[in-house]
Image (cartoon, rainbow, N blue to C red):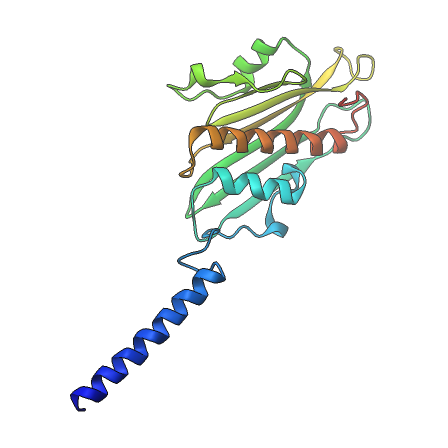
Length: 207
């Protein structure tokens, strides 16, 4: 092949390669994708609440992986006198558990007692666990968000009022700043709480 033809072929190849990368950028395909770890909406745990809200929150807190797996288990109440409502959602990737979300019905108790008994606090983050709402009993850090909301009024289940304890625990974080991660975990906790309050036959209004 003569020199001029070689230069011509190289030029054509360069233009073609530039076109491929340009299309990938415009279409948000790898390596320019905003969502390198695609989250299938129909696979997300239903116990995390409205799918669009849950997917957005998960994207803001999870590390980037090529794919994610979800395991969801929900046990509903038999009737209004039953306190057995519980749900567990686990998000994994590459053989590692990234996030766990647990909701359970339990007897009402002082906020600090609930935090001490139910909310995991990572060493070095104990001072970061702060309330995030004046309307509900909720606390969060960059690794956990939890809500303790009224569900069954006194007189339905022996022992007085029962609440729903919702705890989202991020076991492996993404690259987002701590403030963004905390905000995403709060959204997940609130979304899961709304789902649980509806499915757990609660008679105490959220408002």
